[in-house]
Length: 474
Image 1 (cartoon, rainbow, N blue to C red):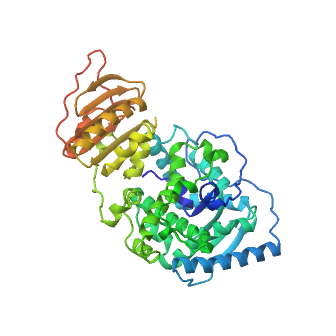
Image 2 (cartoon, helix red, strand yellow):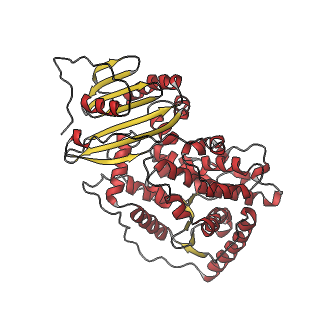
Image 3 (cartoon, rainbow, N blue to C red):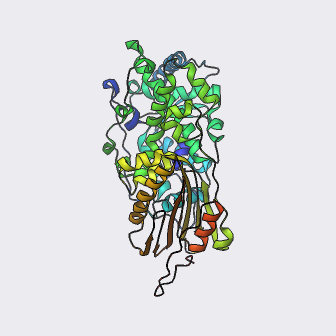
């Protein structure tokens, strides 16, 4: 799905998520000074770290205590996961400014500024982010606020925040040093990126990494009780979730950002718990050999176990119809998680969840007009059957009306829905087990998309002689 800068720092443990209340263990949440959001630049530019004054290095005693604790935890995580330590792991205490600089560097190395701009604009087109949201700077502030420790697979180095007492950081070590062991066995950076360019499949792999590290952390916490996650009868991963309102930036985050941050940890934990039962950590090796291909398989582990894979769908190129002033920003897959997020923006979660669960494959494209920045969104969605398609049509048409409150020329039939907005025409057509949408473009483009994917022709929309059909905005 549309990727956020979270992906550049995916192996970070968020204090407010993972260390909140399990078994009575509470870690102190860090707090970064909040700053007002600024408007995004007209031309994307790399995120630059702020000027900072020198920070005194930790004492030798602090370094020695940290190193000894990390070595002890690393040995225990090797025993828990069955992953042998093949080489030494570098371990470093880092200041908040150093961690902030790391987040910025990872953002810039993972994606060029222009690519991050395209992803943010695509999220705006899907209704996942407010227009003009300063995503880069917000994510830097949010991640700096939340990070307690991280493992950097490029440097093969484990960092931990120097402002949190070492005795409170053993769980962070348990999580991040699991990543260090995984990296020595599976080369996790390359393993995650092997899913590209499918964003949904990449998020699924990230969920394996974070979820399995969460599971390992729980087993570490249970060591002295003689228990492990595989033999706990039932486990609610929500118990790992602290009070998000305690974090100023997490509280202020758009729901899509917050959910994208949480998903790999909590949903990945549920997936990992299902994989670990009944045979324990040896079962996890198969997941790295045969990784899940969609967030749907993460959300429904039984579909992974039965190898239920989504359909591969395509959309026709409409560049020629839009004209040379338009450029394609995104061409990707939303997945069940992505569609649930889109639906939740305009419908309640109780309705969004079953609608998204009927997902069997999708594709979306986003185009932008070079001068005006006008957006065109095209989606194709396959659903589980005719009943689910009819239900999706009825509820997504409602969502589109909420997404575009200023509209006219509304036309509705049993399987076709359209209206006009100041940003262009909007179309939704469903037939049998597929739906297509076009937002921001006129009828000829919708007809071309509809015909190309093999749907029957949609019913003509009566033309209002007082208000002709909208042309593509220029």
